Length: 91
Image (tube, rainbow, N blue to C red):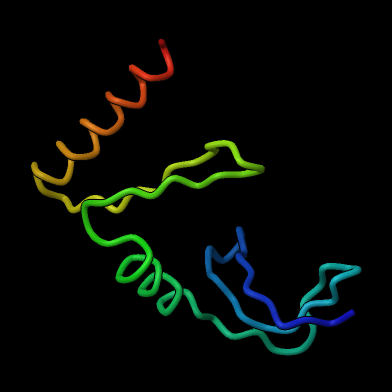
């Protein structure tokens, strides 16, 4: 089956949009580099500055995404959140 998909290349470190064969996982034809658009959507909409979002897999917390501004306030918010999470893990 062929589907339009979003994909990431570890070789080019770019996000692409294009057609993929779902059985072979091979790109078909041209793919478009949408890295800038992807990051803009991620950082402007899904993950605003100085925020974090937890990602669950199968109902369990698996990952945390952070968007930290390079300011003292941004780093302090992230450190405070991480300290709280570390305390919860050790209980």
